[in-house]
Length: 88
Image 1 (tube, rainbow, N blue to C red):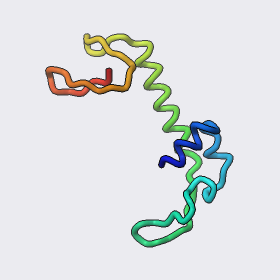
Image 2: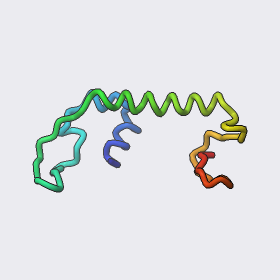
Image 3: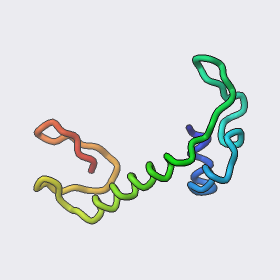
Image 4: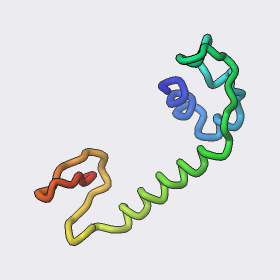
């Protein structure tokens, strides 16, 4: 996962579509259960994941309260008195 993160940081999200599976996976990558070394890269999920994250961030940035409580868009999570977790 760190390898993919570094590729995204250096080349942007399009690197997923521009590189082959072999270029994305680390050398010697194999399934832990069966040992298979042949992988198929999905091309229709990344954009959905990215869109969900961007949409979520945009809503939080536009909205300053949730259920009457102030919210923040920073990444630290805090607990509320009711026991739920709020990202603040």
